[in-house]
Image (cartoon, rainbow, N blue to C red; front, side, top):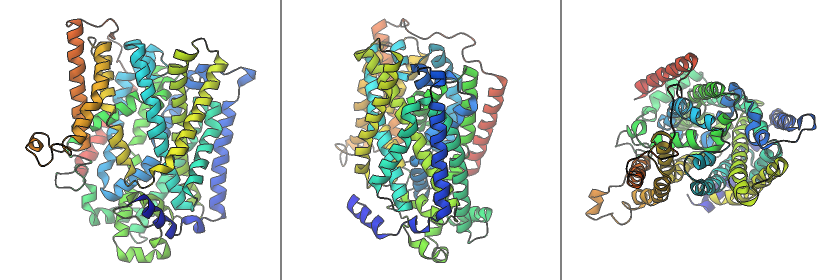
Length: 568
């Protein structure tokens, strides 16, 4: 559906604004005040002491495990999940939950094998690690790349989806909704830095989970015709069994997005390892821990929370699909049933549509949960964007002797500029359907090459700076070859049999493997098979973890095995 037609449809439908009562507004306002008060309280200068770079960007390296775990989830769960994944749940079903469940497994790997190296290096940013392992040139290339990615993809997409949600739910014009969300996130994150972001995230996660569970319950109850959530779960499973295929077969219409067994052994690993292991606005929380063990416990807490996320973001989408396709249930909902109704061409409206059915007071909780998800992610992205710009660009090229005060002020200013740019661009994204899949697909063009550089840089001592730079640069043409080539110049020709159109997730996996091969060949040729001087060397205790870490990790693995066995 085009942008113009989509906007006309949104305007032609009434919003939830008329169903938002006094107590809903009270709940939402209290939530906003609570976040602002906590954010500004933890942001204050203690005893008149000026914030240092470590205070502002790494929360004084004082975060406990439960704050790290909650902040990881708050940073991760945003409008992309509430709106985008619910939309994908409506369109294709439980298969999209693999992003969350495989993410839990990825977090365990990051905690055991990546964090010990990062924390041992004492880094502020992921590009800083690149400098220590490879070179300043490669660090600068990746720093600029990440800044552009955060500003033009991550910040803008979160603002757009958040604006779309509030426009659909409350009838607020999208532009005003985007401005409001941006100013809310800026109100405490720009001043307080990571400390304000992490501590408010604890409250955000409470609202996020509570509001999500309430919406899930009401969605399932509606799907069962008022007979309860368990009856609703049974109903949606019986009515839409194809929506409960966790591993899609080739005949499924959405196979191109979730290519069967490739989800378990292919390109989804590229997306997850890149996101959880080398994404600044995610990994920055773990670098702010009191210790490595505290950081690893936080990782496990986040992994456990990831197991329940599909319950609050995917199941509602499936319930919406069942309700929409059942005339009897739909008619029982009255006028609300025809307000902003989702469809195959507008699946991202599934979650906002469901929120209309919540009773007074709980609508406020649900909207607060959605706002919490959006604002916490915005605040995290702003903080990480400013961290990379300040530490890896400003202090490298503009003022190497910057004082703590100058460093913190530049961090605040750069975050403000990034936010303004994203606010201008976000409304231009209007017209997307299944935005979550769209974001994943286009981020997947660049993530395989970066992951290849990091994996070989971490675990293969022969990897050279030249090999890493060549690999990083050539990975884009490789990715575009797999993405554009088969559908462009090879279509309807003999070459199409050699280069068939592949699911984008498989494209990511092949791009990563091809890039690793290029890096390995260039590195081996350069050093004649010898170890690189900056190669990382491990001791026998580098990857040793506590018995608690091992027990909880094993438990999470058992739960994942059970889920995939039941829903295969």
